[in-house]
Length: 388
Image 1 (cartoon, rainbow, N blue to C red):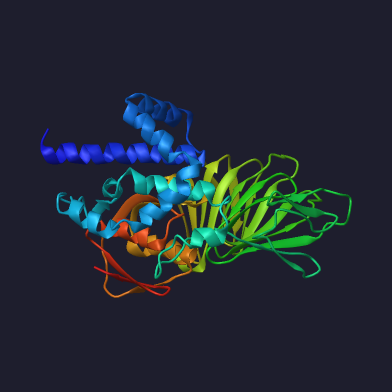
Image 2: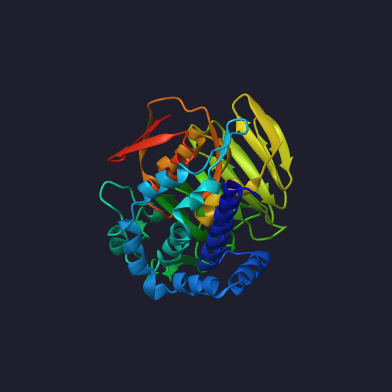
């Protein structure tokens, strides 16, 4: 094996270790990944020490200060000179080269996410360099039937009404016999929120999105209305179908998991099924989806296709995941998550594949994209300029 191949293999192994430890911190590893991490830790005393050091919450603050003092840009440039980027039909796998910043950079992503609900927002902001853009965070407004608007960002344990309270930062409905009323949860740019509906269904609501629902489900159906992007894990109740209304179509489920992307700028409604079965009804008729299928609903056509659901639902795990995506497809969610404006100075025809944690300043995300050598960015205020 030549030196370059050995170097690339080492990078990939470092990246994998970083991914596994980051997943351990975020508590979202599969059983197989947990076993893989355990084997990596047992390989050497050095691996054990790395794991212990980077999962020690007491050292996180000092670690973040150290990280932002590093000249990451210079280190990226040094390593890029040693790597020959390969093209496969203009598809650039930048994830292989994300490892050039070292295990520390990638582990920071997991640490930052894990502690984001434990560190005061103002303290986290202090770690964002001047001129950079901080990532989004949990943020939502609950509008009650009487018009009252409740800012949920700082609420932990609060009684809002006889039907709803905030418990440990989560909205709880008591299903009392009171007459149900409609509530609306609205997420701003740079925000997201997880909600448990009165029937036990779980909903992830992305930036610039909303969901309208009753404080108690009554009647033969469970009806909600959404805008933007939402992911549902529907509580099973065959006697009371769950129906989501969005952009003139109705999505009917019983015990199912699916993603809805209905942003106007995305070129049509996308309903993607990850578990169970759904029925979509609209002006053009109806369509049934099986797991792994996505229906693209456009004014003049419906397109049913099989997709990899991981990139579609990555946002619920606080990740950006791209697979053969154009730069426009990459940057649209970046605009919403960082509350930024993207301007294209030049056309970029290349496609990108990779995974990046959402809980990093925008500069780190852009540097990893730039590591392909196929795209460049300039950040001024809240404007990101894209060039080739």
